Image: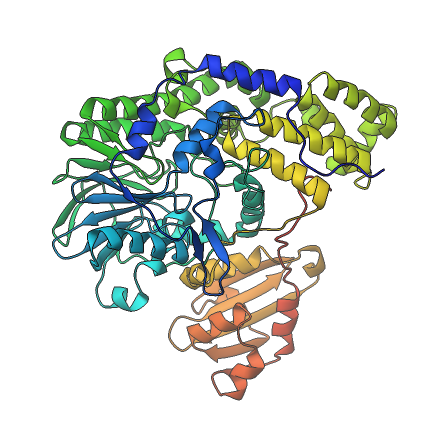
Length: 633
């Protein structure tokens, strides 16, 4: 009989643990629910946001099931957070400032000016951003957009820009503000390692999981990611220093740069005429990630804490409401200071205690198990690990200072997963014996151990149906018990793919707009990481691009490395082929949009030398795999 591939109920140990959560935290505290509903003005009449082809990219009603009592298959704390995040509609933050919430993973903020409306963080995709703007206009009138601000370099804060403004409007003078370094980080993050990040983000946000009590219930920071068209219009105004002031459509703004916090390029901003403070993603209603499960550069909690202290010093005395690009606002100066102070202490404590313990010789796994958060922080709902977690943030701090190696030479040269798995399974008496013992551990409720040990059987023998089924069951139970939304999604996605195979990558952020925003240097860097090194060891190819509207660029493939030289440089060597063309044609050629022969046919290029060398060079580039396996070898 084949294994059952349906989602299972919660096991007794998980049921008991989830019910214990109800007695651990103050579930009778309704302040967050009051704040999340305050200023509600209405929501969209149509629950489904679709794209131009009629495909659904967002469903406002998908999380209606969260209105019921928390079932045994979910951690009650995460259920509470997801219920709060699932509220959708237009909300008044204070007079003249509004937020569209629940239309995507992030919020879109709209600030009314003298003639129009200023848009902050236009969501992840054009479709949800357009729907959000339409909702605002339905309640506040058909005001034109007079400016846009990207608070930081993550796609859910700029990807929907084409849903609120056009490139022609920006070319005509409509300003787009962003923190210094925004464009470099926005495009590099989503291109260099974009394929791997997007695949892992499928696990992190669980967009392919069924919504429901045994499936996806949220991601802690928001519900999930939309699946529409991600775009980018480059910013036109650079925010380069703290204290910089700008006025758009009569709206006065004072900026605080916060690089290295939640994003490499990020800012907070204050509206002095509204006594309102936008904290971007630096102070939200959860513990954030110091290293996201999808992968990113490790963030610096020491700097993060410093900038939160600075925000209090700069703005608290003139702030009556603080809001962010996720979750709901907080009103009242005392409450604003409490929120920012506790968030500051949260990141500072994680940093300081992790560094203290690593200096005592503890490893990341040991620190993650030993660290205990202060009671005053643990009882505050906004410090809970719904998105980041204490456990994986501790490991991120360790990685930032000491890297992947814990100092034990036994871990210096371990076998890779498949080879280790085969040896482990053989040592443990074979697959049948491992599974027999693992089933006993499962019955005892030790799902964490089952997942760890059965993983060896799956990697030693990925076709072992019993192992895959037991591993899926164990991951599912771990998901049911997790307070962290992204952990739950990772566990349940692992179970889903073990049972049904890969679902691929639902949301792609490496869009044509992002590719177009790459500098030529970034394009050649992106090509270099696609070179198949071993196949290229013996290649020695030099191609020179003579740009009619820029400096020449020489590419040389040698020793499996693709090096680029900008300008006329003797060290670049003599080319095997020299091609004269415009930069736009070079981009089209490198992105595969137009073959060289087509460009030559319309006399857009001039070629000297052996064109087969260009073909040979491009032939050494491999393609990334957006559907690579994660829970199987």
